[in-house]
Image (tube, rainbow, N blue to C red; front, top):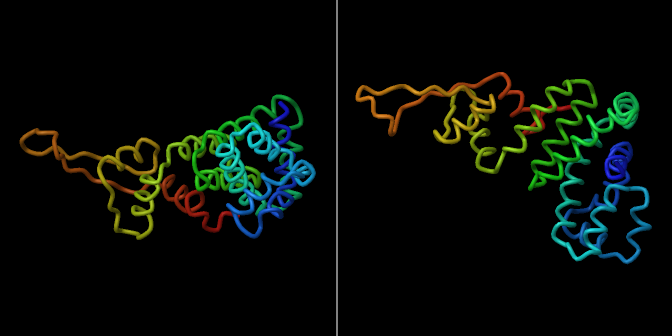
Length: 222
């Protein structure tokens, strides 16, 4: 569980990681990874040593995006007071079962995300979990939905919730978003019974509204 322990340790001290990259993303990440003394620079940021190892093995693209996703996640976690983070981890990750249930699950999901925007969304969900605003069950649901949120679905969800009373979305997206509880989708049979070009109606859901506001947009999250 070395990687998971390093991940949880970094969450406790996320400001140390963000301090290195406060002036910018791509250039800062590249310069830190390329620095010959990087092990010393990152000695207090254990999870980013994974990126260093990838970089040294020649997997520069993987190293870059791992670091970028991790920093996007940590940017959201850092908005939670440090003492709150420590209290949460001490309470929920005091044994191997807790470490696996919280730390390992979060790190596994984060590792599967393919864009920093999704990593930031996962960070917002984890921050809400840390604050006790949501349960672990709700976090798991959010994480499942976040993994499915490609740029197309994100844009469609914004279109649905950005302007009240003006819900507009493509039928394929509406069906997918409804599968995750983010919308209500209902088909209306036409007189001929032909299912092609079938009319449909969509409505907002309370889950979708909260997900849009707090997870996708990060509005008043903490």
